[in-house]
Length: 313
Image (cartoon, rainbow, N blue to C red; front, side, top):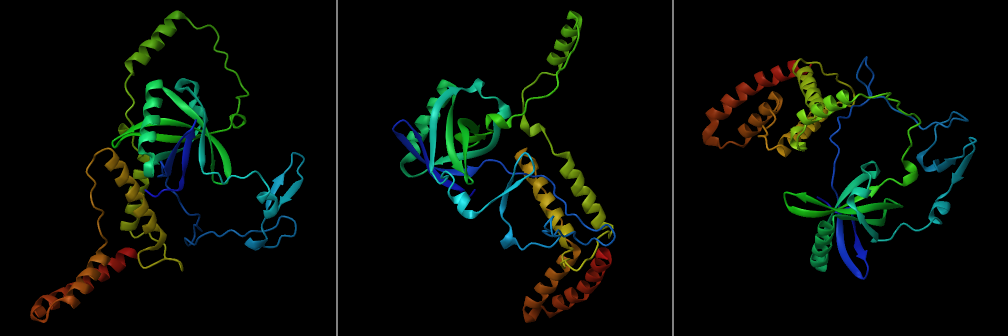
């Protein structure tokens, strides 16, 4: 992993130098918008809604829209005058009971690693959080804005690690504008519901969960490639363009999911065209005394290459 931020956790007179790492990554399947007729990518232009003309990126500024629809344009100087968000400190405000933090507030998670001489105070803070069953409420400047968050301890295969979990601001949590009137609930119905809960009770095991959608998309894309359903456009590469890129990304996602569950990860099959190219290259590098082998490889390569072309067309 690559550290995305360096600073220090401060509580009281104690300062713990740390590195910050993203603790999560998205494996969502992404698609490109294309023209159904020929597979060409759909491009978007930055067009002004008033004069209808395309706007260069250099002329684009940030605007704040008021409640009555007016637009206030903010310049770089305006933004530079805002309260500074360049602090490299994760300041602990207080330690609160863990059950008081509503999971609805949780946002992005980051791992904290001690740096330099910070190993001992890091271990002390980690142990204090565990034994007190509390989280540390902190303020931190990340991505050009001040955020609130909590420090909590997470058990991993490499031991207990302190996690910085940024939180939503209280006014960012919406209140539902509806209420549920269930009417009279009978005791027999409650007992039956409790029985159902007990029947389905168990421990949470993330490894039991699988992203069926990503696997299904990979299988679908692979079947279309094998069936020759590949659109060649001007932006396509010799390796079948973006479709192959999508397949590779999906294969990595599925492999990562299987690896996380401890399953054996099979190596992806190489395309015939690449095999032929590899054999041809090997034939060129072969010593002179292996001329017969080189000729045999040269004879077989064109046939496989032709088959690959037909398959891709």
